[in-house]
Length: 204
Image 1 (tube, one colour):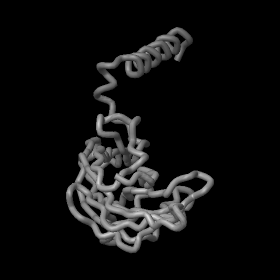
Image 2 (tube, rainbow, N blue to C red):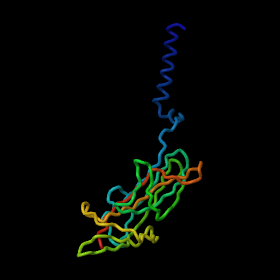
Image 3 (cartoon, one colour):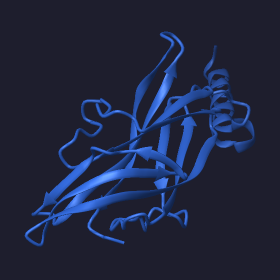
Image 4 (cartoon, helix red, strand yellow):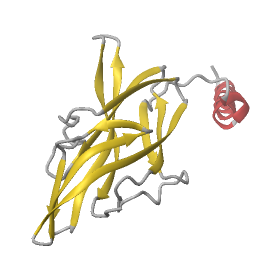
């Protein structure tokens, strides 16, 4: 091959590559391997924003929000969501060690989400609790019931002690995400959780 023909071939290959890379119309027909496989999980406030989450929680006051899941795993996914509640001394989910909380789930629900689809659910909750008073000081909150979407969940035996540094009776309502593993036939923790932190000092 002489130099002139070599230049023609080189220019032709360069032109074809430029068209493939630069043309949006041609890019639609290119099948490139996906590398971003993940699940999103989020909580939004009652106005559907990531801003005004409830913090000072009053007895039997109803609060609302939205829980969402986005599937980018490349296939339809079967998810399990576990609802849990804890005080400041009880175990939370651990992102560093990829482990769920060892606390028992108060309520479970499942959902199928197609690939590249979003599932979102409005939810409401209210706490029934009482304060223990000693010498005019509040030392402990005793919980009785959690109403989640108007379903009464028994949380008798749950307590929160006064945190003098943070000056709160701490409460943490959180959702853990689990995913069904077809290979072993069980749900496994999917290393995703979201939650709300509360101050349980308001009486009514």
